Image (cartoon, rainbow, N blue to C red; front, side, top):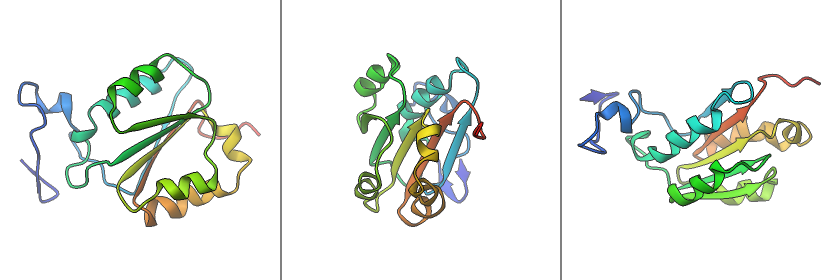
Length: 150
């Protein structure tokens, strides 16, 4: 099937394609914001996304995933064992860690439940406005509220 002029890859011939790849392939160098209340399964959704990462991008396979989280949860251990490209760390990355991670290849940076920490660091604005576009970085931001309560 052609989509955006690209032949869709068959990731797992034993499954229907909608179970293992995106119906609409994601474009690199962009961001996803996942917002929902506590227990809305945001991290579960992310885990399914990362497990099927090969089918999410047709043109540009992901090289690395850096997952930063605010509060530990057991699913983090499962992700570490299941997603081969993932690196995990608690807390917010500093500017030099982000710049080192953005090596010009298609990488994904996940920020899970770090809104308050992000508000305190001005370089986070650059992450979503400049680094995603210029460094082939894809950001996934999980939060309970789209807007800060401050």
